[in-house]
Amino acid sequence: MARLLSVNVGLPRGIPWRGKTVDTAVWKTPVQGPRQVRRLNVDGDGQGDVAGHGGEQRAVLVYQWESYRFWQSELGRNDFTYGQFGENFTVDGLPDQDVCIGDRYRIGSALFEVTQPRVTCYRVGIRMNEPRMAALLVARGRPGFYLRVLEEGQVEAGDEIVQVGIGPERMTVSEVNALLYLPRHPRRQLERALRIPALSTGWQGSFQALLLQNKSGGATTGNAGLDPASGPPTAWAGFRPLRVMHKIRESSSVMSLVLETVDDSRLTAALPGQFVVLRLQMATDAPALMRSYSLSSKPGEQYYRISVKRELHGLASAYIDDKVEIGDVLDVSAPRGSFTLRSNDGPIVLLSAGVGATPIIAMLHALAAENSTREVWWLHGARCGHEHPFAQEVRDLLKALPHSHSHVSFSSPDREDRQGVDFDAAGHLDIEVLRELDVPRHANFYICGPSAFMGDLSAGLAAWGVTADQIHMELFGPSPAITPGIATSPSRPPHLPDEPSSAGPLVSFARSGLSVHWGSSFQSLLELAEACDVPTRWSCRTGVCHTCETGLVTGTVEYQPDPIDPPAAGNTLICCSRPTGDVVLDL
Image (cartoon, rainbow, N blue to C red; front, top):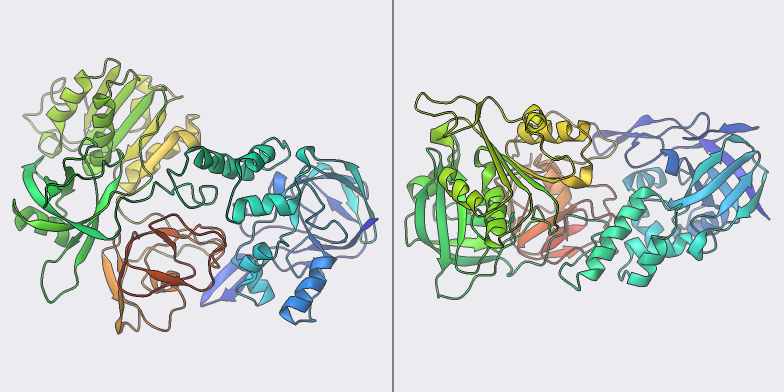
């Protein structure tokens, strides 16, 4: 008979770590006597990061004494106390290889249901004073698991654990854990997991993404269940020389370059919405500038078009505007990115502001090229007619779509701008405009523009009842940082590290416009990015969760430790990789 050995609770507190303060409740302390268990947690317990822990489906974390003994031997330690692994219930019995998702247990007067394996993050490594711990829990198949509280009640150390229900499909915690994190994700197993009603919604979403990836027949690589942003493999590694075929003024501030191959070979057709990275060698004695630009042309194999807005202090945009000439040869990466047009028959709303129209017009080109019968809405915001790129091109494309709608807002129209001809309404494009136009809420929304524009629109759409999976966005600059448990510090422009190296491989952060030399004091590319205040996204820091997965535009890396499941082709996990030569990252 399984038994509850200890009930452990802890509230969030600040823990010093690498010069920062981590808000965490991973330190749990055993309690004496009965303790009430409620729908969201045990009385006296809390979570420092409610996005990653806690909630109805992760109310109680369970870990087994058998695993305690395993880790004592594995790590050569004898200093463990109950709650050592951040668990609420330390139990004798209930091994991960026997307990199934959906199993139900009566403990004391409370009733529980198993919902998912534990999701490990770097904080368990802090608690254990073992940075590899997040990866070890997965690699050794000893994650522990979460319980949902079906009936609230009291529990106490010493209570028997009585199984009162058997989960459908009989998939163990170990099997489900391996299905997400380890290489190989068999379709039959994914379908089995998705038939378990008790499986938490987050894990269901991951398995649905893996199932779609499985059905794609290799069109994508990597682990879509951990990194939904993984796109298809890039057509070539590094950079390829392309010649400037045309240079076109699109507006007072936007210049387009039309690029072709130098040897009359064919280009790989980009997906509508993808971008390329340009390597601009502006001076022979200075590092090249790396910049990411969305493709604005119809997907095809004859040419690529990029459209670049001249920024006030933009070195690269000024160089493209003033110095690049027809016939010049530029180094260009293969198209990449996952902000791409999805195939379905439902309505589609294309929302853009300013030069954010570049990936959006590529989508409009694709829809027109296939004579789409979908309901298509083109909604664009610009300052005035002089700053409105692609105006006539968009009108011509919309004529080819039988169910198209268009609305253009000018925030500050000039005297010569004609309402009803050049634009539809004065003011900013926002959620109220969509409401007034009666845009269908069940559509897929594709949004690109300044960060404030996208943030306001996405929040407005969510408040309007549009679900997160209907909203797709593309950022021109770095993505917002994900630093779980650490308060976001005031934004600071990317910069050289405090003690820059001058001899190591050159690491270029393309979206941030920064190139720095690798130094031996850094353990990973993630640590270098953090030292430069380049916005980063991470969680486990040991190659498990793929939150840090980043496009590797060119160059090679080595891993320490090796990832549990490799990233997509053309990507790297920056939390555990180091450059073996010059690299360019999509950061």
